Image 1 (cartoon, rainbow, N blue to C red):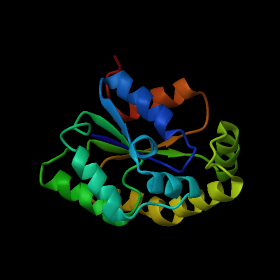
Image 2: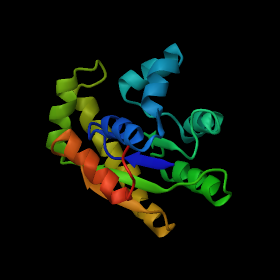
Image 3: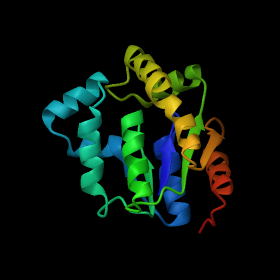
Image 4: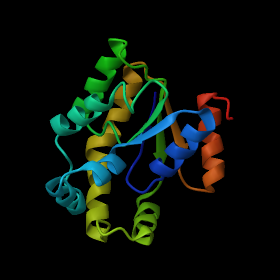
Length: 179
């Protein structure tokens, strides 16, 4: 399993799908799953930018392990907090899953805001975007060092540039054969 991380708008979904295609893995996006499968109240929560609780998200991911999430999955949008990270690394230690690497895409805040405003989703107001970036920086960014301390391979990749160049940099960093 390869975990894709990075702030909102950095290109996790685009790069996750490209990576999955190139190395013949499947792609599971928590955000896409929630947008397509969530209840009306969950949809409202998503639109307002409110994050789901650790318990809610872990329950979803746990229910998909062995089905849509396997060791040949690029996992996008999970984990986002330390408790979620501890849970998934616990599964890795128990040999229920194998985390090959965590890929962290990087970009400056002004680039992210521009990208997100351009994609025009109803939940992408500038205020919500900046709040989501702040949440990432305070809740998610610190767990990247935690992953490193757990002995998990972490590859930090510049998420700005040509899509194909970024994708090739990810494949090279993971030492994977692209098909």
